[in-house]
Amino acid sequence: MAIIKRKRNQSVRAQIVADIQSAILKGMKTGDQLPSEADYAEQYGVTRSTIQKALKDLEDLQMIDRVQGKGSFVKQKNPKIDMFNFKGFSDYALQMGAEPVTKVLKKEIVDDQELVLQRLRGINTGGNTIQLTLDESHLDLTAFPGLDQVDFAQQSLYQTLRKKFNVYPATANLLVSPIMPTAEQATLLEVEAQQPLLQVTGQVRTSENDLVETIKVIYSSQSNFKFVVGV
Image 1 (cartoon, rainbow, N blue to C red):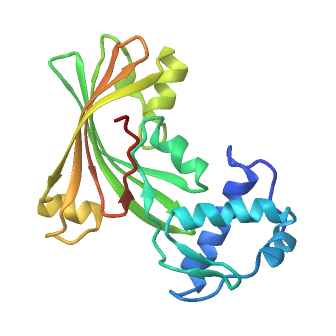
Image 2 (image 1 turned 90 degrees about the horizontal axis):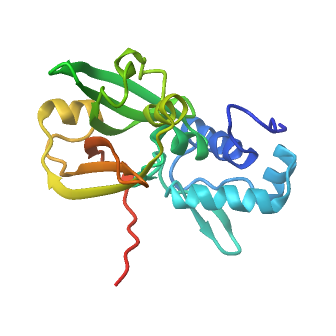
């Protein structure tokens, strides 16, 4: 099966990652061995180096283990997603070969100028939806007039800010703390009621230090966090 060179802004590598994810989710179990790099290269009509990079992506998602001299094996069927990024959820999902899925839980205007937006965010990979975050955003409608008219179940917030308002989120000042989810939050994120989760609160700003949004994000147990700090 040859991969389409461009599909919904996905790279060839991302399409291969998504297709292998789909095969794992639909027809494999933990411990099963994946086809060889050579077999995948022939199947997708690409070089082995492209396959090696795609398999490294799946390893980073903790879906497979790669054993030198033996091959690649299914580790788990749900990926662990590196979620600590603020370039945009939809951009990140498409980059890793998945489809972003958003359910708007609340969209209301407070004091005629503040938009409060609550969303359940997840990804669809291989026909399986994995819930990842509960987001609450507070945005100034005087800075972003008409933003309340956007359908955020279909449109990306950050893509809208970039395209419609020429505003580019660049930095985030954040506080990370552990929480116990409420029964409703656990149900929405599809986690156990007593599963500790991480909550991030703070502000996102442009490179000129203009406020973009105030946020509160609860991450599901399927999320990985990677920090790079100077010491």
